[in-house]
Length: 180
Image (tube, rainbow, N blue to C red; front, side):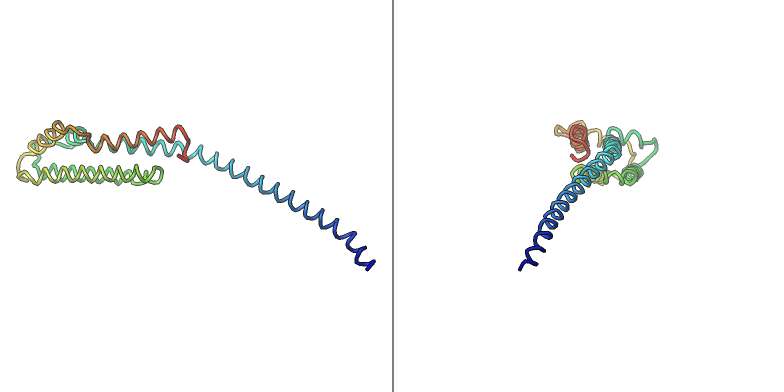
């Protein structure tokens, strides 16, 4: 019995010191790991914030270029037929969209879905209006029909709504940082 008591006299304090050392080292390592993660996160933010802002800028430019008042005059050429203008507009919209595909990585799903929706709505609008006209008619007829629709439309155009959504999210990111 004396041997057990003698053993306990040395092992219990050793176990207490070992446990205390383990807890102190563990707490230190966890704190150090958290500190390194925060530093890495801040460093990452300094890289991603400019990329996200650039993505918003590029998508805003894309959406602005989709607006009929910007798109048609840029593509329209004298001598084109309705069919030629319709194909040129569709090609232009799709190629600009493909050029900006990588921007979806940097923006929210809401913004990206909005941009995709605007692209589809603009393509549908052009196709519907072109289908109502003779394909061999002068492209000026389609141009005039589009201008007429844009001027008569009292509600917000899809491009205006998309620009507002992009703008709002960009402001949120600037106010709160990339985690917004």
